[in-house]
Image (cartoon, rainbow, N blue to C red; front, side, top):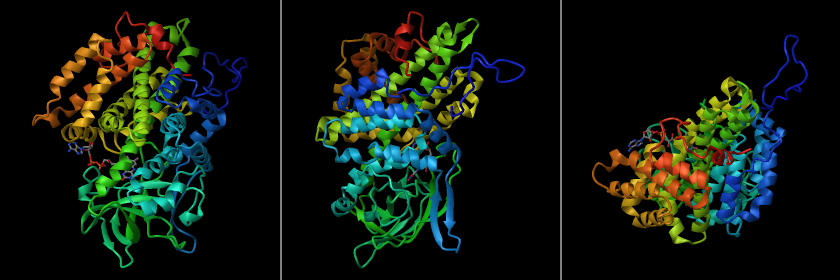
Length: 552
Ligand SMILES: Cc1cc2nc3c(=O)[nH]c(=O)nc-3n(C[C@H](O)[C@H](O)[C@H](O)COP(=O)(O)OP(=O)(O)OC[C@H]3O[C@@H](n4cnc5c(N)ncnc54)[C@H](O)[C@@H]3O)c2cc1C
């Protein structure tokens, strides 16, 4: 993607002329996308369209794509000691990573939405996050955690008062310094330990209260991403039970807190982002929320990062589809463009459906988050259940959709220069972190059992489309019959959450998408008229209508 190909008309080798190779997809506006723009408008952030296009043109530009490629290729490097042998525990990033961070934080994708009182501020931020995710998603991990930490930190009002203005800042200031002396801060989280990630009750890191009311942590974490961030919410066992603590990397007096990075993970994807194994030893921390209520406190952060997983997966799917569509529009086989070949139209149309359903759901969740934090109780209840459903399904569908989009490019898709391998390696991640597939499926059951208002809000959302499509109505009836919390419910949880996701997406598309999209979705995803892989939509599908919705 980054290489500038020679003009197509000139021979580039002595033996042959290069023809029929698509131009690179660059110099376009990533936000010039009807599905994205309609969603932003619907969820209350049309005022952001101008800025979104600016960001979209940046993300579609050659320089940004070069940075994405470089940040991904030149992985962060751990520096445990300085040249004199002092422990420093720092991570060095390629300059391209810093450029991307500067752009994303500057665009308000970190904490800024929490300081923006305009209705739709969180939707605007979500759309920007989706646009930047098309570049190099790894750099958005610290951005996402900084966004997400704000509501959790408010459980400690004094601490929040000191740090929230810096977490909501649009200034990116890399490097470890006294937090209050920086113009902007970034935050991370440390929950997962060796003996348990999902089951955080198994955490062994201990917390002891010091005479001055601060705490001291001792123990380890197995995954703590973005270790160069300034502040971390960390779970540790206090005498009163598992509790949430704020750990700064630099203490208020300017000295380094103990945060020994043992090593960085050698990861499948997400390679621009550093994920570390830190150890705490007499590490200074402040209690956030009540002692013994650590999970209850940090869940306010996890809810928001789960939302970002949905946004990121919807965006990763769409970015791959944009590449596939671009290739198919320019590449000819057997005398016709790929995009005109009936079977390729079926593949692209099916992918387009999947992508529109994912994007529409992701933005609906962002809208709910926006309204929930402005006091809308029904939207809060909807978000509780729908986030688990969306996180499960949109993240689970991403790897299959990206693999199919990659195949649309043929062998070129396997070439790093196409950018597709980067999207492919990134694809499974959102399904794992912040609660893996099973965890979200079981979380849906928990919400149904303990928070009946979340089901009421979910039902109201689906039934807003009642009577509009018989396949949707009957899929919902069937699901309601199965949503009985019997003893075997955990065994059935994936069946239930998959159907809940499809019915929710169907309801949204029936109300908001063009008829071609809604009809094909209901026929294939709810009516069962589809095979197990992409490209199996039934004859009679309005493929022209589906392909009109392709991005780029
Ligand atoms: C790139 C990357 C970055 C990360 N960054 C961070 C970070 O910054 N901070 C942090 O704290 N963590 C981080 N994590 C860790 C991540 O959140 C955990 O890996 C994840 O929560 C799963 O925990 P685990 O690895 O311990 O797996 P386990 O908890 O052992 O789960 C293994 C499998 O069992 C399933 N499972 C769990 N419980 C049940 C059940 N009751 N029934 C059925 N199946 C179940 C899970 O769905 C999963 O598929 C990161 C992970 C990755 C890959």
